[in-house]
Image (cartoon, rainbow, N blue to C red; front, side, top):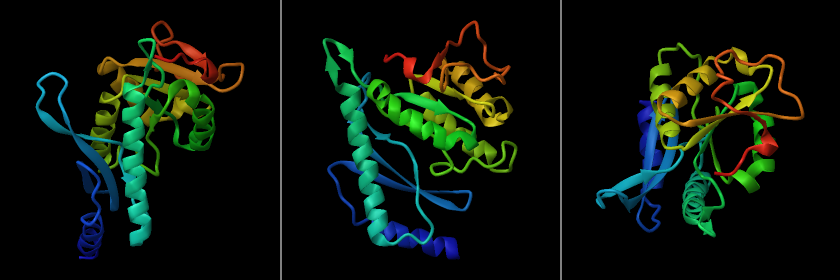
Length: 222
């Protein structure tokens, strides 16, 4: 009952937000609430309109209306910046890449935030899936298949996957699965490390013959 009451409260707030042709969706998973924003756009092949949703964002517990409205605003802003990066070209080349999925061990989140910010001028925006976005939980938990479904969709919407290498990467079942999923979906995979040397504990699930291993600062723009 409590979850139902909270869902109705959040729906009531979100229903009052309007922005152009945006569609705002409230979702619930693993006892937490999430919001994502989409826009009605024409399919590049058929021309038929469909709703193109952006990344999912976790809603804080007991959020007030002002904070939720601001979160939705940030979602819309993120989508607009994504579209800007998608269609911004110089001399026929896309300058910023909005289609990079970053895979990393949970304990490396803070390091990845710093590295992502330093590399933004080259790579543009990332889909970084973290506990603040999707609570992955244990790899073999009862809810893990639902999490994998959402992650598979995010990876599918990206053009490439960057795997952050650290001493913790090799022991992460989620990173191993994300690499395997990226390979199955035919995505380009790049392994990236911080500093001047590759971490000693390199994951055995990385195929060095097909996956380039580079410093974060040497990842090429697409």
